[in-house]
Length: 188
Image 1 (cartoon, rainbow, N blue to C red):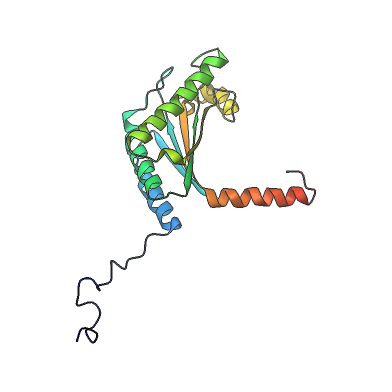
Image 2: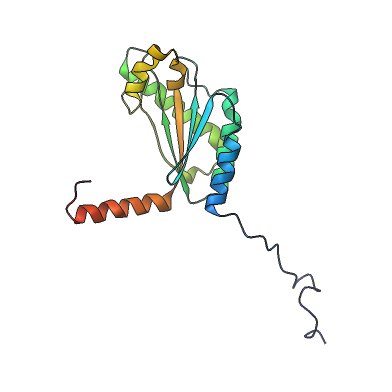
């Protein structure tokens, strides 16, 4: 009689691998740990709702991704593959030493962001996860820092691309909180 057989003897009844999939926090922790070993032209930060990866020291006036940015992009693509709820913002930057023309700086910073996206796409990062890609030249948030770069003798740190790997759940909650505050009459 087959009914009295214990479950697990027949391979069909054998329970599948019972290891639970890693949590979102565990995946983020793994990424941060691996990002810690990425090299000299890469920095990362864990930020509320995700991870910020910064690839810096692009060649002056050039948008090509450095070879030593490769391991960081490998890890970012792998992180996106196992985190389908994450979305990516890619922001390119240029510094004032690269050109006196603001439009050239904006173009160069956008080109850097596009090149990073191309590298992520080559590593099979899902295109549906890219939310925005833009270039800031020296007009963006890094303008004051970029202006100070020559004084600090580190201009390469401001020729960079920031890759924000964010959890959309957190962003949705923040938007809902802003809407509630606005409904209560607070300036947001």
